[in-house]
Length: 365
Image 1: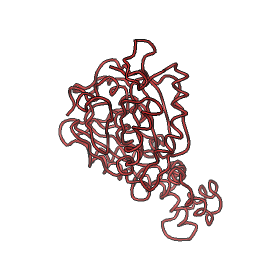
Image 2: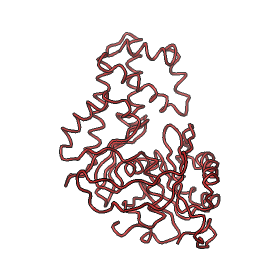
Image 3: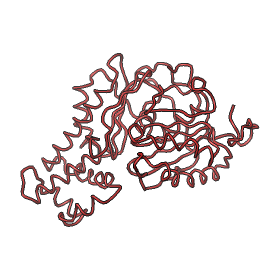
Image 4: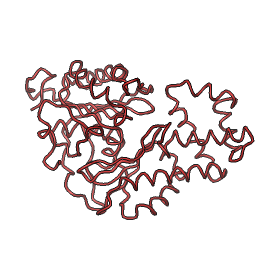
């Protein structure tokens, strides 16, 4: 039964409920609506080459905020996320003529380690402001996984501003890296950009390991090198700023040995993380998702070699969609009472008006 706007009335068959999906990452916030009915079911085993189940299609264009959600003493700021999310959600609902939400799924970067405030405050705030009665809070790695593979066993490398590998055998989740740009995210956009800027600064200083080509690109992009720390360190979005230099590194691959080594090392880091989380048995699926892979052969070439060495049993498949698609899928399955992904206190938790076991599908643990 779908609740009407949080008031406890079954809906009357008109103005059907929709689902809301949120993708909160290092480059900002994306929000989309979709109809909650998803035709078919892909929870049965999938053969090699079998067509994958489609994700729900957004109702209209998603809305985007380019401001990353801030972190505070208790982690990701629920207030700052709501400040951006609520106007976008209300606008999307008004444009779609939707009066109620069947479910909401929020995928957030850093949720596993910095999500205490979101877990404590979002359920009540969304119930109060939007009448939400079914809410999934997911690490962005989980929405990236679901967007790429749906509910299939395997592993996904999600490399955008950050980098995390996540895998599941559909009974539990495993993750590797995703520790943020100061402690990890090795191979992600911020990591590549930081390595490129370090090589530029080495060339500026006259130290070994520098790249004159990267120095020229960095000076063109950021100005004089002595001013770079002052431009970068105070910014709350410095991970995104670092990642903005990654395409410059990729653009020099094949012509600049230092840039080529940076991308080779990034590929090794990503493959090592994927090998740490991929199921060891069977023929798990393996997909790539995230903006880093838009850099093309510069990263895909060395990564294909590294994965071939470390995960020869994994079946490489194209990603079905991105993290926003994954959040839409989770929200739709939650609204329909057939969520088949394994629950996890930090990676994927559900707040709902029904008991936990009634929300998850029959094939769930």
